[in-house]
Length: 253
Ligand code: PEP
Image (cartoon, rainbow, N blue to C red; front, side, top):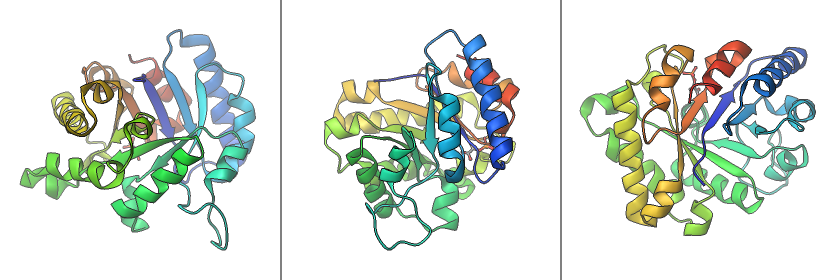
């Protein structure tokens, strides 16, 4: 079902104590200030998940997410984390295919299809990231490129499986750069992706799919971005590390 979601990707930031302080501040502010049914998701580093779960578990509409997982169920994969492990510490959502994973860890659309499968098999929700580089934006092929990422990693799913996916459109040129996609640029891409989903799964599934925007989203631009008919919230990097900024974004619908 289509939902309003704001997800905070902490990336490789915060010690355990810092993370617990940030999460406590966020859950207190959300409990006091957020009256609607917006879903807030915190994605701390793996090692903090268990501790942070205890801070969010009793707060309505606040959930725990991971930033990645391994594509295998278990076994000799030193240093990796399985979906089963994530589930066992209270994780509900998993970010997959963030552009930093694609670039620094060579994650391909094919590998991401496997990760999507194992996350769904375990009953967790993938937040599938897609987005184009500045070069692709400037050569004008950005809609085809991002649509292709969805086709290659998601279109093997049955309609029932697909309906559990959350998509995050994150133009790489906007991530961590301070340059945000304009409201029109975000809406154009989100509408195009929804059309692409409709061509495969039909309009009712496409209309029900939650599509988030990510890339230098902050309190000053969230309201304008989220007001677009096809933008259902945000995946937030830098601004998710400051409780006041993050909760102000959560309140931007
Ligand atoms: C991200 O990395 O997912 C992201 C959106 O980062 P930022 O908000 O810092 O651009």
